[in-house]
Length: 254
Image 1 (cartoon, helix red, strand yellow):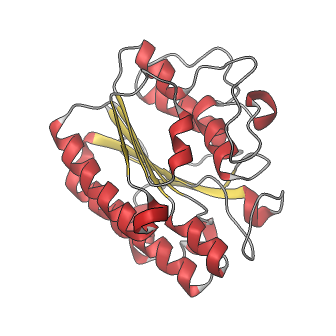
Image 2: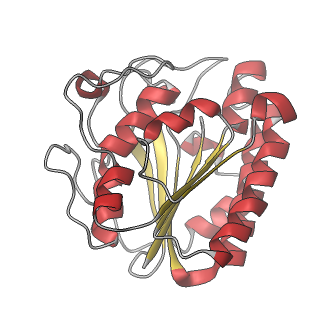
């Protein structure tokens, strides 16, 4: 069993209805269109919560500047490293480096979206991830695409420009799944949504995120309720046969 988690920053569930590639994958997956993120619905706090399965009120990062934890909680990569599992992260927004602590990763790859453009950086990450994962045995891989969030801030959520970024991410997702095949369980999600040209509030447009799980044992008939972003780390450890950290607050979805 291997797990590949793909996160599109700022991807709202209602952006997926007219995206053919998204619907193709949703139709053969377990789909949760109403999962909740944490408050504040800001990128780095949401990611720290995803990886550490606690809220920002517990881990202390409430803005896009990482705050070292006063009472540290082991994150997903640290827990997997302790179980002798290999983790890799591919990302195009530099602050994502803070989701793991030193010595917990087997590999990390960063393409600067701010420098070469988030669309190109996402495509480069996709190709690099495929190359790496075909060569090296990796238990958990996280791939972050920042393009939708950038277009949301520049042009507004649900605009044509934002939707083009969503389509671009799904082109990358389809390529990853086609190249890597059914050896993986795929978890496709977002950190938060957005409204107008911003996010961070407790509005449903900001707080509701999609979660799509594709792999053996997951299909349209499998329904989930009251899903939160803090549930994703325990789900990954359960899939990989590893005990979650005792301080995690989320629950495995299996």
